[in-house]
Image (cartoon, rainbow, N blue to C red; front, side):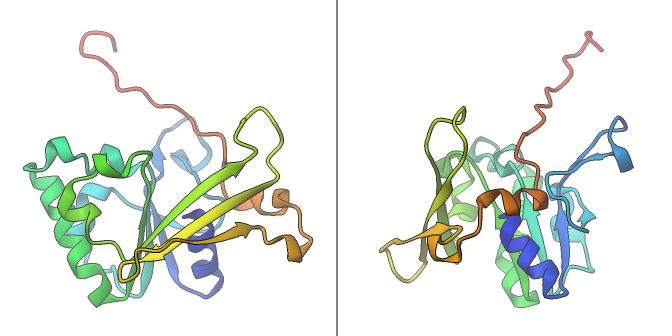
Length: 178
């Protein structure tokens, strides 16, 4: 997702990312990408009139589009945004650990589905490459590739500068414990 946004940024498109607000970080946001971008709140996607001919990245989308909240106004509006995004030439990328946790009217409207697998699987070992499996909505067969492509002869560490691969865990404050 971060890489697709990076390619769009290189092509001159505006990129939006839902980085977490946190005053302890430079610029007051805990950013998951390191290239220029604009911040937004996923619950306001449908009401952002300037969204056209751009790229929108929604990291950890399960927090906003959880199927258990399918009747909530914010989830309905995100679904409405998803239906309209393509008409406005908006390239919307969202990720989640478990696809089936996303509200069904959103998770069923994808154009492309991309699965990525770390090689080797053990996160304590150095990352060699990422196996990428993709398919479009009209073809159920996944196509497999590798990033970076072994023919490129480029180390994957070259690409680490575009995103932060160590996520900061944010826990919600419980009432009475603030």
